[in-house]
Length: 172
Image (cartoon, rainbow, N blue to C red; front, side, top):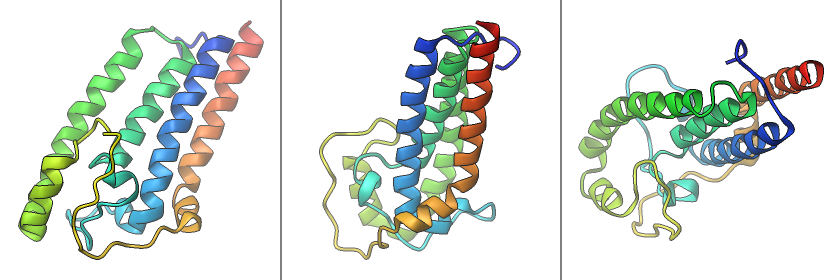
């Protein structure tokens, strides 16, 4: 992406908006789900989270990642529209595989509650209305915990914005 980067003020602006939306979605999700979103071990989870962004889309962190990568692609203005489209297709494919494993666990663990949730809340495309069915316990929203968890992501975003901004400034 950096090799073919040719950012413009418009691509930088649109990309920053897309990145901002993706990071907000991630931050909101992590502020609710907590450290369980950072596991690299076996698939698992304490809660069937259906509040916050999870009330609108089943996989807000993955959707946030997709928006982040597409936003960086738009910012770079590299090989548009092919690079952002390739990133979108790649991440949809990759996350579909990951989500299928996660959903196997959720079906076994939360049974009818998860089935009802799946019927109402889409996997990757958010719905505007909020899912509000269920009486199961939910973790508390903790923005501070979310920011702490997202600090590396926020640092990476800042670095990319600076680098692509410098490309635009020096390459004109």
